[in-house]
Amino acid sequence: MTTQTALWWAVVASGLYHGLNPGMGWPLAVSAALMERKTSALPGALLALAGGHFVAMCAILLPFSLMVTLVYWEGHIRLGAGLLVVALGVYLLINRKHPRFLARVPPSRLALWSFLAAMAHGAGLMLVPIFLGICAPETLDAGHQAAESLMTSNVRMAFIVAGVHTLAMTLAGGVLAVGIYFWLGLKFLSRSWFNLDVVWALSLILVGGIGIMTASHTTPI
Image 1 (cartoon, one colour):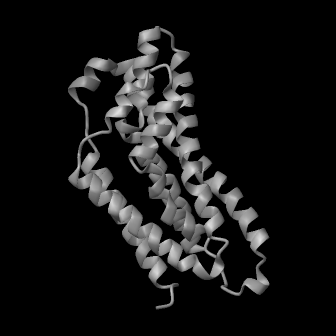
Image 2 (tube, rainbow, N blue to C red):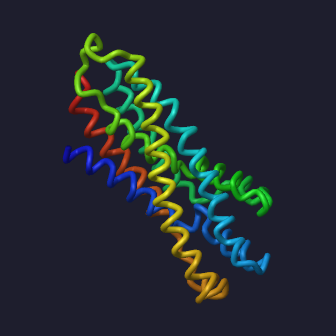
């Protein structure tokens, strides 16, 4: 229970972290509301960003939810996912350039932008080792755990993890967006912009490393 609780807190914490990161789009929600000169545009933009982020999380997690049904390979899958996350973190640490195609997405398509940004920055991959830990079967005896039942529960869990994570992200980003919109304004944002690229890359390496360590205890050599 302690491990499961920690994993769920990790889902929430990663969501809050993504929400605070300007790279996940909350400044776009502020600018959209200011440009339209309507307060109602702010929650609308935040919902669009949340929708795109949620779809991106599901697009990453759902394939892994099906792979976990291969009970005997569960440890190897977790190990491979951890290595993939670490590799992406190292790549982003070396290559600091933001994908140019994100700048070509018009502001009117915030949901699409949010989906592409989450995929490009590896936001969904950060959840994979955590998700696999939550879905880890208690036993490797497939005779006592039907694959169909496991698949159904894991698919449902993928949506739950993506939903909890996206909700935490939207709340964190929403608080910043509301504060900037009502009290500080875009001038403050332009003067005090904070860059989390290095922290983002290091966090991917950390999460991947934790996934590798936990998987190594369950994977037979």
